[in-house]
Length: 131
Image (cartoon, rainbow, N blue to C red; front, side, top):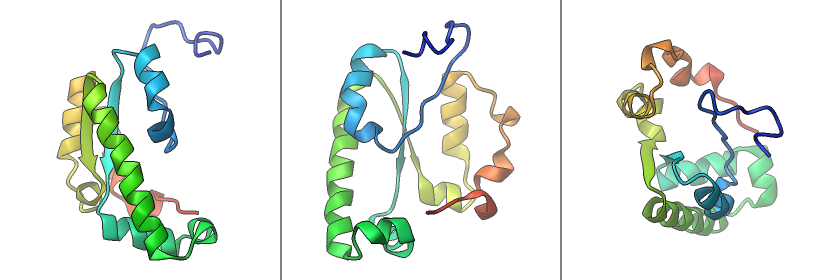
């Protein structure tokens, strides 16, 4: 599919989707050398964010639901971490606080010059979008 869309293997590409926690098994098989970046969140912060975001609250306005969702989602991420060869973890709260060292470690590992990223926008709340 990626090749049909014009990918010629000349450079790295990235796919970002929260649903990868559900689909990772297929991707690990088809892309065994892929680097995976798992973004971890504090459970209570995640639950509050879900309850405060209208789109998420429309799914459920119960903390118990989001608590179970968090546990299930993280279980899937742990399975991915144990199966994939190249897994990097970053913590959202560290980025939120302006600590981008984990992102620099990831960029160095995958061959992207950290300095070329617009790191200022990563930790700038004005660039975060919630639905």
